[in-house]
Length: 287
Image (cartoon, rainbow, N blue to C red; front, side, top):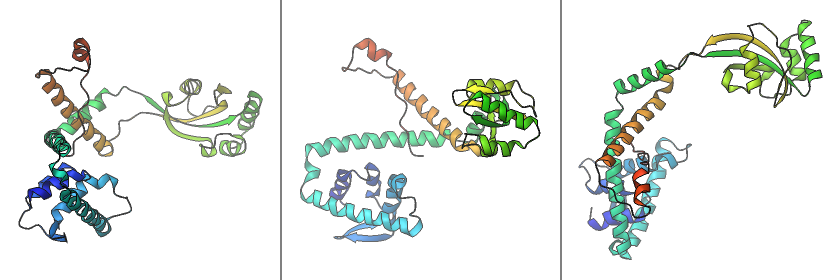
């Protein structure tokens, strides 16, 4: 592949500097299309997928997705060849953009290596264990409620419940809360509810009915069904979040370390302000 093609690919900017990796094609690369003699291979397709993946319509999968990407690369190459014919790759603006994209690609490559080295099973497990250990003991509540507009209606609902009527039946008839079917609120912690509701539930015992409780939403009659200690979710349910945290921390730590060992001079603000400025978070990098 010629240098002209390499520079032209970056000029378009849609796929970015990652496409420069396609400048040296392995012998086994399969040619999928030719545009005025310029080959587009399956390696080009893989790079495009890595770069454009999040923006591809979700309904496109398998061959349909590959066809979409190949059409994009064909259109891109047509525009690239026109840009090259117009000698856009020889302009000062292009040279500046190329320098910027080169630096960005180097940064992403290094941070990608950091991500791969950081996201080990051992590191993920250790981070998970630390977070689980740090969780403070907390109670979860399972309750039903009936929400009405005023205290009188709440007292009437409570009287019906105390007479033995089914809670779900009364809730279906009277409650103004469309989000709780039959009044069922499921499991929750105290802090997830408005203070008046949470405080009332925390004082109840399973099986009890509350007196009318006023909140910003109206008047509640509450039935506490069960309580249980809140458990930390298993690792397999939150592994992705834990891994993301491990990676971002490793990348951020690297950037902070580099800042500490560098001489940074800023002319956009006073020296003291620049010195006190916090370092930005490390940019996300593909693994």
